[in-house]
Amino acid sequence: MEREDRRRGPDIRVRSLRYLALAGWTALIICFFIFGRAKPQVETFFDRYYDIHLRLYWDTAWLRPLLWLLVAGLVVSLAGLLVNSRRHRRRSDEWRVSLVLPALCCIAGILAFLWAF
Image (cartoon, rainbow, N blue to C red; front, side, top):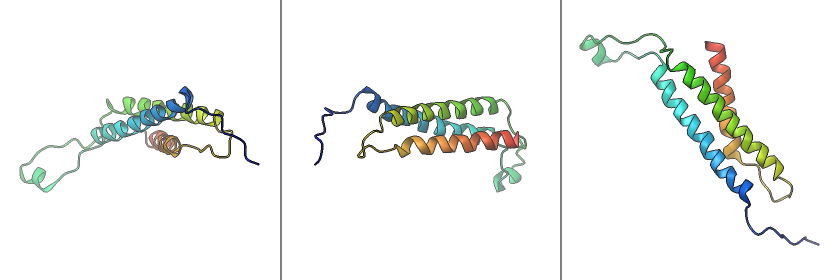
């Protein structure tokens, strides 16, 4: 005998999961841009041909915001997972993969940052 589903629709906590996932992904994408800005420049044919001097070291001014943004993305994703765990009571409820993946990527980024610097 199946129970009647008395839910009238997603409440504010379930709707907030979408925005938390979006915030986690946005933080992660911004981290990729900051990482590209901070890493040493790669020499190309045109750089050699026109004798352009490149930065061959990490730009440390971008590394602190990168770490803080990784931590912020992790906190947002973990907050979303906490809300998801509180709302995960029925068999039909699902875990949001869009919250798990940014959390794992942020953890990997933080560990790589701590290992490299």
